Length: 123
Image (cartoon, rainbow, N blue to C red; front, side, top):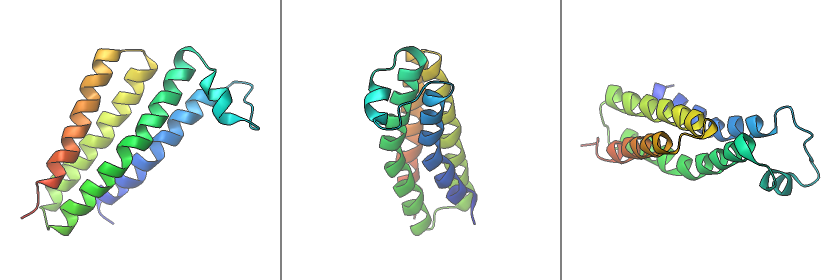
């Protein structure tokens, strides 16, 4: 399996990492998890927001990788952009947790740029 396909798996798992961080060490209410998460403050609230954004960003990334593969873009370029996307999204999560809004926005935009670039790699 190609590196870019592994990146799809990792990118799909990142929102679950974020929600795990939001719930870690807390008295979590599993009967009403969304209500519980909505009432959180500070880093837990930011982790939940990062989780939601991760689910929003994932479909475009997965589609972009698949389009690049289908249009026979150079595998090395697809892999580089996919790895960059994952690294940027990990950085995005860290910036969100640390409450670094400007950095978070830059990382978000760069990750979006990777997705757009993937669409234009094929021949």
